[in-house]
Length: 210
Image (cartoon, rainbow, N blue to C red):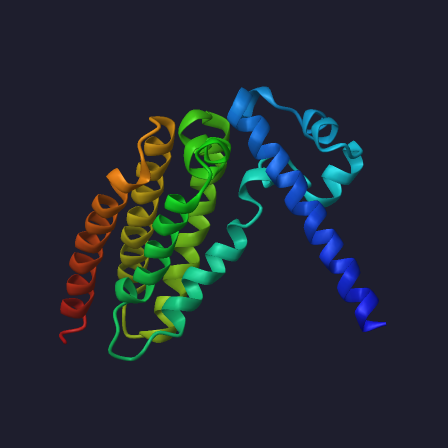
């Protein structure tokens, strides 16, 4: 029984990835705003309902892992070492995101989150709402680990951290749109991210009088 369940889940995951990759290819070719859910279904050779079963709304085709990332960032802050700043806790996640861009297929990348959010006003609004939610979760995690910090300071620090994430994401998207080779920008993005995180780490430690 467990083997059958494992096979079923694997098939569902494969179907989900197939639909997501098909959507990314269409978005790369036509742009996010010019592709409908029915277009994705036809290209993926599945029914419209199958697409909706996996992705209830069109933005979910691009932002379906947003909740996973919100939890990942908050968890990193919540589970960091006592002497580690939130910025240092997030550093590996940001480096990972930059490295992921370097490994991505250039064509498929045009149809994914970083590039699409710079080209579609509709998707940009959804993305900014999700960043706001990410900021709230990060602020809540900070209040859990450092309850003596006031709510407004926790919120301000969380917003600054998410701003770094957003800036690097936008830089990634612009590099994809401009067809810049990853090896030309990865080291620069990593340095800029490191500089910003170093600054925020120092601010946080100063705030705590450490």
